[in-house]
Image 1 (tube, protein in one colour):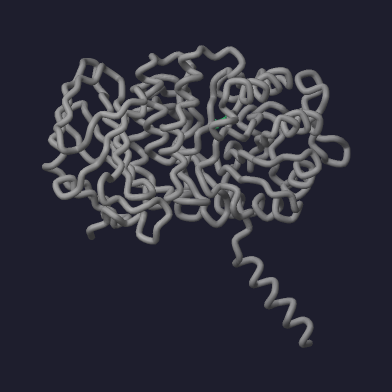
Image 2 (cartoon, protein in one colour; image 1 turned 135 degrees about the vertical axis):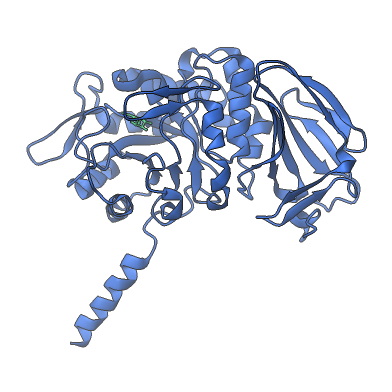
Length: 418
Ligand code: GLA
């Protein structure tokens, strides 16, 4: 009797505990995903080329880590229900592909779906969650993107929790990327279950458009970021809002790609490239490997930025960083150049949510331009510049003068006033 009671209590404790593997996403995850470029035609050759290019382009050196195969890698299930790789496009199988990626010091990701079928019509994991998780562990999968097509009336939290438990039971640490497009407010329950969650439907490669596809829409950069502003309180270390894989290098102008990358960094978004890494231009490579912008994304406080100022088509995003620093992104959303003039000393930039206030009248900051990689003086002098259409200026403000030494006890709170 006593034994039965102990078992009962243990079971209750386990079901309440977080299932996800800890410390896989202390910072926003970084990597590459096949979908935006290769869609359902992806082959093992494409994935190997992406892994090679992630190393040779310098992306690995700045922090990109995951190589993720999205939808359509699947073949059929075998007679015992085990999922197989597509025999023609992945003839060497997924274990060999994972080994190839691991041999380059990178991590390997796969895609599945909580429903009967994936969005591309391949076998989904519904009813096979534990068996699939076991297969992924055997293959050496480190990351699972788990989609939401063909789920009928499934309960989203329950469905993702089932896969989270299945991964836990298979015992190989796997980062779980929840992809249900924000339909069931995953920001309210996702942190216990997975490491990041999509907040919107699919991205498309344009700066300011919404494209209808019958019963769903895809969105360009500006319409996506406009949907993130209310969600910032939900993001932070181990649990991130995911505004989707990037479209940098997929056809927008250089200024638009720069603005897109800057905004993802300002939002502390996962930086998952979606272009063809093996053929990308030097310009695209330079955007994706801009260390100073990546550092804003990866800042250890993990604060998602907010809109500080808006004037016509000019929007200024702010993101408090560790050591009392602040990132600012001036975005020209419009189709003609914008004049920017900032008399810094007139402003107090307040992040009430995180209780970080930057009083520019009282404290002086050194200004660094994160795209020209140059210093631009201090906040004692007004800043004047012209921003081209659909482009960005991204700055980092670091306290000068009496700034504490990095690592000292109050290093993160120097400008906190509230
Ligand atoms: C959904 C997801 C996309 C992609 C496709 C694959 O649309 O949101 O990111 O994974 O499915 O079919």
